[in-house]
Image (tube, rainbow, N blue to C red; front, side, top):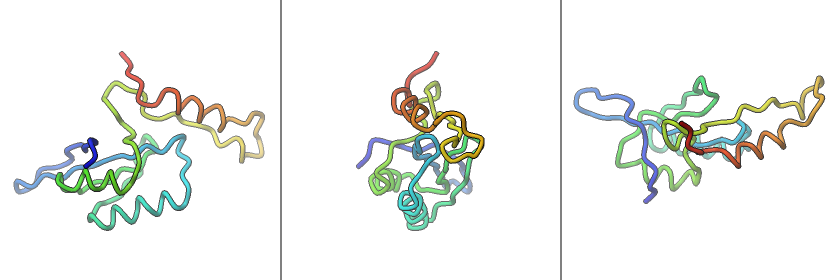
Length: 120
């Protein structure tokens, strides 16, 4: 079982539901990974939400399903602790007609080096 938990989202009629947010470096994801997130969410009756932080939240989950869900996803959480680097926003300049610099490579290096780093 995975060590990653989830965030309590709601308590209704004594039932608790949780949400998880997988880390998607730079917001770039392969179609297969996106399909995997959708399939896992569907299997566990989750609801998908695109957050204001440009992340994919899977909510409406049961606490006992969190470990198996993380195992099936094979992904790290986007938020490790409250005061940590959560995501690096990267301009898609490699695909933009106004591109002056290939930002994706440097953005991914920043994400890989600093994601989850504790901040004051």
